[in-house]
Length: 399
Image 1 (cartoon, rainbow, N blue to C red):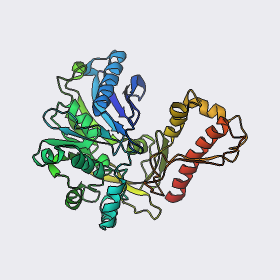
Image 2 (tube, rainbow, N blue to C red; image 1 turned 180 degrees about the vertical axis):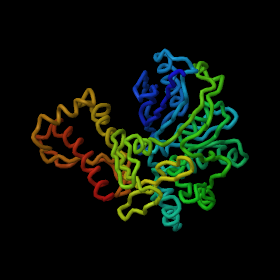
Image 3 (cartoon, one colour; image 1 turned 90 degrees about the vertical axis):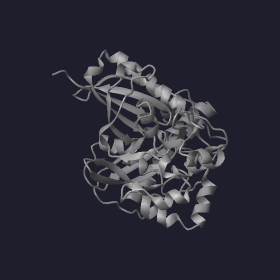
Image 4 (cartoon, rainbow, N blue to C red; image 1 turned 60 degrees about the vertical axis):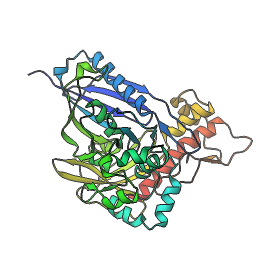
């Protein structure tokens, strides 16, 4: 029997990556491409959904070409993705109506305030396990329907589809044949009943989202879709099954082998996310953490308790790209090691508000304690310490 290989697609907040693994879990080949971050207004964050698909397809094609394998060697594809980010597209043309609204975007904070004033926060928490915040997908979809000309009418007429990035990738890879989302991504939309594993009718009505726009929720393993024959650049991969789909943070929980209740992982990327496996129990936090679905395998639901930090690696990226005081992320470490402490400088990287446990949609970044003797080394150290302080908040809340 020929050795079988697996392809992992990792669609993140700043890059799209593809990795091919052999049966021993060893990397055979990989490719990664960055894509553009759009900031049209203060607090707004957008991605071009077409660019996301293009970079993901390009990474997949390059990794496959570099592997030297044939399509018959590939057992299947697994997808993991940035969560909460939403795309709304025309179901016939598969063209997005506008840029994707990213999980970090704060444009719907006032909409959340209005929903809170209507007394929906407790219902949302009980049903979805989430706090009422612009972080999640529901108000992003509502904003598109309310603000893009013709969107609401097209949605009512059944012309539109919407979903998180997993849905978008699978729709495009399957040639429009499959409009699905896995349970982990669905549980981050603020529209999904995590107890019944179904879209919640009350919340759909509250956010004015027609149910036919939404993808069909599915478990995390199984034959979910098949790569279509006419995807430009991916013709050699036609017919390969998509066998798994899971949001990036629960996939990290699984990847770190946190299979038992009480096991915890923390991972660092654009943001930082602490998740604890709570097995079949959807634990309600007393410290403003979130209750989400960790995975559903063979009809067995596993839940997680989660703390979310919105800006971690993005704070280092800001030092590099916006301030220009470092040339690479690694240089942040080098500068920080040149000083014995932070010199009294503290940095709160709340570029897109504060997540757990504070949940302040209107918070913005702050640097304090600057003196005439403060320099870039102190700021680099304060940035690294800020990441640690935010994680400490999550650890305190999860214990």
